Picture (cartoon, rainbow, N blue to C red):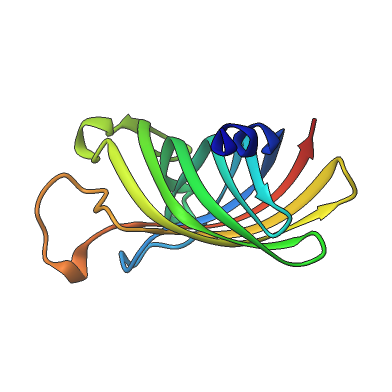
Length: 177
């Protein structure tokens, strides 16, 4: 009976978020590219100091191969992060967790051509997630997050030094409903 009453006391905050990505593919020798992300959030507040947050986020990631010729690897992901949030000062929190990403489309693109390379890229991506978030009032929040890819984005086996793993710095603005 006590578990049921505690479960009912849990608060859920739904929201939306959007922002900028600065992404690269690990130690590939490529340059960082600017992308974006947009999605929804659900934060399950268990105590005033701790919560679990899940998200469903569309994210444009990848890398710049040659900026002078506008050649980019564009990886379109649908990401599902699950985060533990620890509030350390008023409405500021640390975030840590894991993220699963499903590759929807991969394109090698320039001003001259566009090659779909989805079949050459691993469709499933896993990443460790670390970040900071700040709630401003009851309706807004700002976040800074780093997604450290664990999964090699290349389908073929390569030695560890040549792995291409997603590395994404995200700056977000969110609304809470």
